[in-house]
Length: 214
Image (spheres, rainbow, N blue to C red):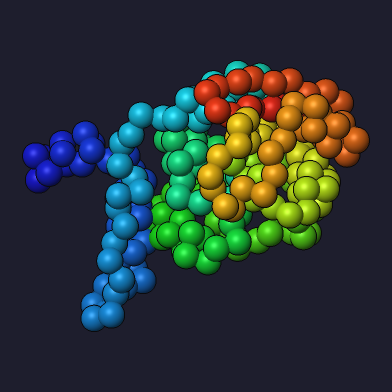
C-alpha cells in the first residue's frame, strides 16, 4: 500500500486523483457499462509557461486578500484548473464549460471530496449569475474560440469584483477552432470599454496574457 501511494504521489496530483476515483466509484461502482476512468488528466506535469505566469499573479493578489473566490471559464481538460486547485486548495473555485463530459469529470472530483470546486454547465456569454459573484474571473485560451466577443467580455466584467485574467494566442496558428487573433490594443479596447479601470500585459512564447482591474 505504501509503495502504491508513493507511486501515486510521484506520478499524479494525489488529492485530485483520489477524489476523482471516489466520485467515479460513487457513480459507477458495480455497473457493467461503466466508462473507462480518466486519471491521466491528473498526472503530474510541468506547468505550461502561461499557467505559471497566471498562478504567480494569483499568488500575489491572494496574499493581498483579493482572490478568495475564482470563476474559471472554459476549464476544458484542466490544464490550468488542476494546478490552480493544487496550489490554492482552500480557494472557492467555480468552473464553467459548455461541454457536458468536461463538467461531468469535474463533478466526480467534487463528489469525491474537493467541495471547494463547483463545476457547472454554462455559457459565459449568457450565464445569469449575480453581478460581482467572484473576486477573479480567468479565461485562459478561451476568447479566441467564442464568436460573440462583446458578450463574453461584458459578462466577465459584470461577474468580477477585482480582476479578470485572459490568455490568448499571440500568433496565427493552424487550429481551425481559433476564430479570433487579438492584439494588445484589441484586448485593451474591449475591456476598458466594458468598464475595467486598467489593463496590463505579460508575454510568454506565442501567447499574450492580460490582467484587467475592475
